[in-house]
Amino acid sequence: MGEKPEAMSYEQARDELAAVVRTLEDGGLTLEESLALWERGEALADRCEALLDDAERRLLEAQRRREANSSSEE
View (tube, rainbow, N blue to C red):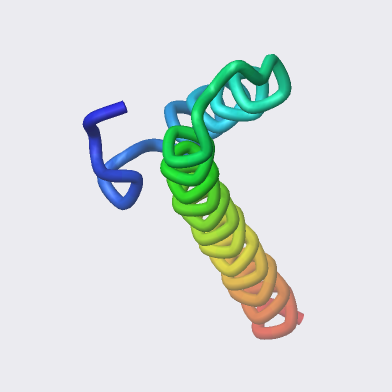
């Protein structure tokens, strides 16, 4: 749990987020531990969302380029 979320790949952040959720669901943590884990989970979820948003943007750009190239070839 030491790596900063902003340095993680999507897969790393997703896998750690799943582990965080399991740990929170299992319970047995103090309030402070739960809050710290929740905050870590929020940061991991934000990282996953940012990476997915970037992937979507890149796909849309690739589609637009392909469509532009198709139009210019006609």
